[in-house]
Length: 73
Length: 73
DNA sequence: CACACTATTGTTAGTCA
DNA sequence: CTGACTAACAATAGTGT
Image (tube, rainbow over all chains, first blue to last red; front, top):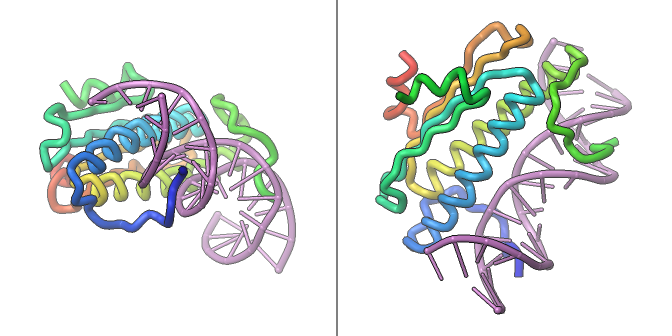
């Protein structure tokens, strides 16, 4: 189990694996953004759009929630 | 050397350590955003603003560079 | 499909130059 | 201040249920 080799920076061609990777890394990015905001007293906002249709919904994130969030509405 | 304990999700009060952490984690967030964009064929854009004045400049990131970048101009 | 697990790679806080 | 180093902690690709 576990990761086999190092991450190769290249589009994952397999649709299923790409979709799984998308969800896992989106969650990871949100966590990193939240930590940056809290630890370093910063405002962080981001938008993520899936191009290959792995996720039909656009995603946005803002921390602290009440500030940059308004950018996405 | 190396990290001593686990990350506590709380504002770093020491100004110098907070500033160093800000720069390191901003770089880390950019790398994660870039990886998400490439690996999962997505568009990612984010904005980071330092609240405590550790960094006077606002930061923005976009991948692929030619797309979401226009949001920040 | 989603979620839990874990080996393995990846990130980073403290440190030194 | 800036950048390199590295021990420890953290994220995650593949796997199993």
